[in-house]
Image 1 (cartoon, rainbow, N blue to C red):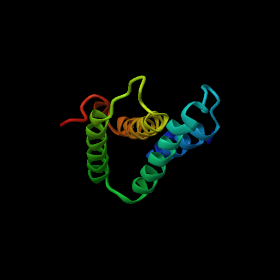
Image 2: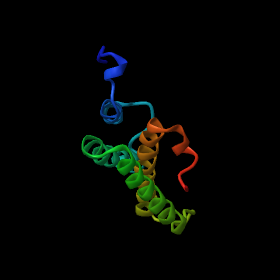
Image 3: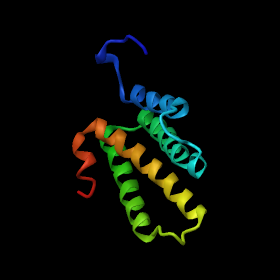
Length: 119
């Protein structure tokens, strides 16, 4: 952990710490669905990191709110039951990780984003 002043701590630092944690955490079984949840998170964090370095806040938030809405619509079309294939379950795990990573970062910007992603 760095010992920088909190006034120097940025969204980029938060994303980088999320990436590091996702890569090294051992708190749960990553083998279920072949680590798909973590792969989804890492994919989202990589995109978020690039955009956090280049975009302004409103542009960043708008882009990722659209992604969350699109993912929500995609989830609505997917159904999981006992007959679902492992590939379907793996894809849902990957998309869940991707979605949750975006929500985690948007929530750092404004906690309202965790609850009000529709408006």
